[in-house]
Length: 517
Image (cartoon, rainbow, N blue to C red; front, side, top):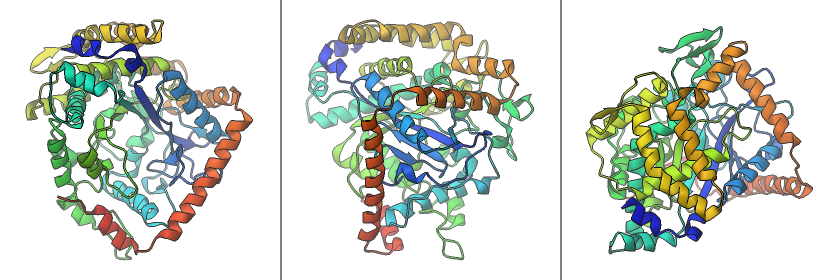
């Protein structure tokens, strides 16, 4: 069916693929330690700015593009946002890798602040909860989120190709969840190809049990790792591992999350919502405070209305796009992701969408997690075997099979756009499967070892080079004026939000957390 579905997508529809990027980066001092300064006032309000906000920490920027049908247009906007940021950072840098810089004591990592409005306070209290539950260091890990959707006009054509009746949105939801199941089965391939966190500063694991090996003073690593960020030491949660989330339908997914958002979890109940001084420790005592706390390599998403919960938006109006969350920052690219990587993602995600997608099972869900951790920690290890639905396969064998199925998709995209950029991206992936030394994780370890053996010094040098490159690019006066205006408008919008609040925060908190059955 893959080829039949692909033939239903004419060149105009393939050119209409929509993408957007959210990129997290730590602000660091010139010596490679975490910045402790507040969010720069010249960047506006992180609560309301459309392109520049913060993630967990006050020192952790999140840069957000709009939705683009062109790869280069998306990257151009991401570069422009970086340029606007650097105009306000002074001597600070944006850390150019996913695993963090030199970190202070856990309680010295500043939690993001969003003002005195109820929604602003809720965002900070949520982050307080993350700190109590997982520790602040884990939350300083950064990455790229890639948002992907196909044009609305494609869905009736695919539905007709599949000879499916019923509402179009129901078909769309089913197709996106098919994409998500296939993505989860095969996302180990993205960790292998684009993982760029095989080493980390020793400060990240201070006081924690780990199996990392010393690479040099202050730097630890695993010799065949691809993405420590996506392994057991990264963005993981033992508590969430008890969640048996099914991706077989929107209804089963929503039901799984609904329970996690409503049933108290003993360990978090022991933390309490407020301390003795009545300060808030977390938003709730449930396994998930809000939907965004659920860690996953990919999420079904729907834009929310003001004050609306993401799960309610999904249930009411269905899936609008998929959010890929397993990509490391590329330390060799000034904006963290290259055009070739984006083109590979488009091919890969179309494959996940157009290929048949069997329902998942508890056994397969466990295998997906094992494969993720194996590739994260040992992906370049000679002889490594993965669980391919009960059969043992090497990454080269299984990955080669996936890439072969992607070839007609890359050819169709090249036909739609002209040239051979998509086939070249696919070819580069095949080369890395055959020779692990071509992966960014291998290159990163080589360059760390060729230098002074220090993870921090390596990333600091890359971060400085990124700043020089981005500051050397033209930044038109119109762009400077636009970002100045956006900053001012966002600050005004935050003040309006604060003035408009009419209920106490505790009332707001209870109302916001209430989910309809």
